Every structure is written in structure tokens, then in C-alpha cells.
Amino acid sequence: MVKERTIGIIGVPQDLGASRRGVDMGPSSMRIAGLMKKIQQLGYEVRDYGNISCRDIDEHVPDDVRETKEARKARFLAYICDTAHHLKDKVKQTIKNNHFPLVLGGDHSISIGTMAGMMALHQGKTGIIWVDAHGDFNTPETTSTGNIHGMPFAVITGRGHPALLEIGPSPMVIEKNAVLIAARDIDAKEAGLLENSQVTVFTMRDIDEDGMAKIARKAISIAAKGVDHLHVSFDIDSVDPSIAPGTGTAVQGGLTYREAHLFMELVHESKLLSSLEMVEINPTLDVRNKTAKLAVDLICSALGKKILP
Image (cartoon, rainbow, N blue to C red; front, side, top):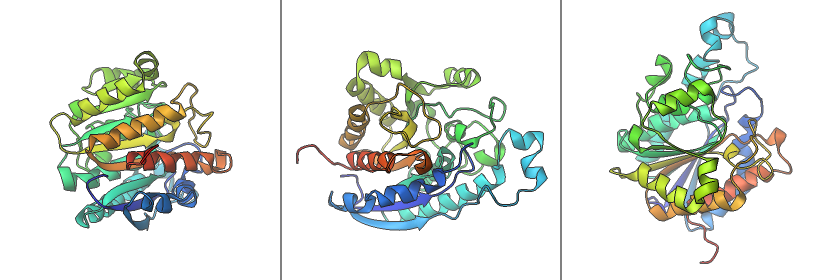
């Protein structure tokens, strides 16, 4: 089990960080897939803190927010910051109650608020494993889309728009304890930022060559060296779209079903997991809630579900 016996579920139905609508329904899709019951079956108590109130993309957005050159480099910045501050407070409340924060997205920009709240527990002295097909290491200077869900890993390690950096404040993790795993679609300028950072990157080729067990153990060892806490931020697009079709930025050649589960199982065995996110599930692109069901099962593997008792 993780250190806390009560799992605190926090839903963040935000889609402002992405180009495609629908990830705002991600938290509901996981609840519908039986998240609470399956966690309880593992022996935990569960408290569902409900959903953070998020701004809607269809709300009237003033021209100075939507149309300026600066705004196009960090779309819906003010609204995303607002969500992050509210999530920060909710995560801090969860920690104060001695509950394990399980954050359900929503697009990946929500991680900024999650990690800002987790600083109440570890003051930034934590390791992080970012499981993602993408780097999410862009800044307003390198982005080609302005979508903030492509920036949170950079923000967490201390790079990006000042309004995002002050939320934590950043850096919110120790960069040498930051690991990206399952990458296979990284922008050229983003790659340059990663190469000049202390972040360790394991691509899908690394997994192909060495196997998930070896790569996962390396990732955990790097992320956990010298720290007492581990955060895993799991973007469902890290999994191959043949298995997880319900996501907006699918990339072929991702993790297999067993690779994804093995990673989560090894994370649990480390006994360091202090917080977990599951993001970027888009039910409008899914098939009979298949992707949400997978996400719930992966969460359960991270919380200790085993093939045999």
C-alpha cells in the first residue's frame, strides 16, 4: 500500500490547455468505470473531493485574452492559472487530511496545480516520473500551438511563463530527479530544452531495446535518489492508441497493456509513491469507455493490485 490508507480523489475537468474538446469529461469517465469501488477493494478508504470548478472554453473570452500575440503563445493563461491555484489549495487540503492525492484530468496542464499543492508535503524535494508520448517541455518561446498542456513539465522544473512559475512557485521538483518515460513525439525546440536540462529521458526506443522492467527500475531509481517522495504523472497517450483510443493527441508506437501495468506495479513496489495523476482521457474519442477503464486499472496497479494475492 501507499503510505496513506485513505485515497483522496480530486477531479479537474479542464480542457483549456488542449486543442480538442472532451478531456473535461475525463474525471467522470473514470468514476463511471468504477474507480472508487476498485480502490476500496484493495483495502483503502476513499474520499472523493469532487471536481474543481474550471472555466469553460465556450465562455465569453475578451479579445485581449484570445487574440494578442502574447496570448496566442500561452492560450487561456489566466483561466488555467485560476484552476491551478484552486487545485493547489485542494491538494494541500487533501495532504492536511493525511489523504493520498489522486488527481484526475482533464488536460495535462493541471499538473502545475497538483505539484504546487504537493509542495506543502515535500517543499519541492521530490522525484517525478512523467509518463507521456510527448515532452510537455515547451515554453511560450518554443511552442508552435500555444497550448499550455504542452508546457507543464517545463513549468514544474522552472521554465515558462512567469504567471505559471509563480503558482508553486517553481521549480516544484528537483530537476535531477525528474524523468520522462515513453516519449516518442518531441518538438525540435523542446528537444533542445530537454537536452540542456538535467531531466532524464527514456524514449520508446529505450523501452524497445532494454525492456520496460529495466527502464522502469532505472526511472524510479533516478527519480527517488535522495528524496522521500515520488510523484507519477501519467498521460494516457503514453499507451498505444490501439489500446487507449480515447485521447486527443494519440501517437502510434506506445506502451503495450502489460508494459503500462508493469511500470505501475514497479512504482507501487518502490513504496515511495506520494501522489498520482491520470490525465488526457477524452471520452468523445473513446470506444465504450475502454480508455477510462484502462486508466482505472492502471491506477489500481499503482496502488497495489496484483495478479496473484
